[in-house]
Length: 121
Image 1 (tube, rainbow, N blue to C red):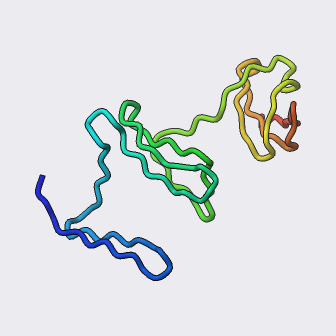
Image 2 (cartoon, rainbow, N blue to C red; image 1 turned 180 degrees about the vertical axis):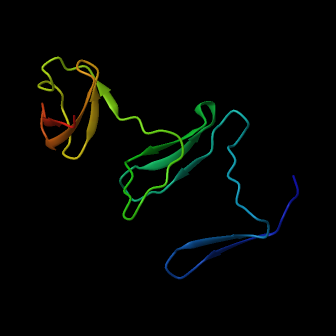
């Protein structure tokens, strides 16, 4: 791998700007057996980690999208088995699940233990 000169600058607010002289920024683990971890420490213990063995990012602490989300691949909501139907599943308002007992999608309309769910179909 070629070596490039990279500029690291910390401004008066403590913000770090990384300016690579190449076309990208590469984050490597301490060895070939350690996945790199990028941590945003806000006191809430959230982080983003690349899991090489699964070829995916793991995001601890949730994701908020304010405008739109472009996704390639597929979206798989949490699967539950609730023969009630949906009388024993905990949930958070706005959550979507797929119930294997009746093959329907449900949306949580009231957070609870268990939550209140409405079928989509």
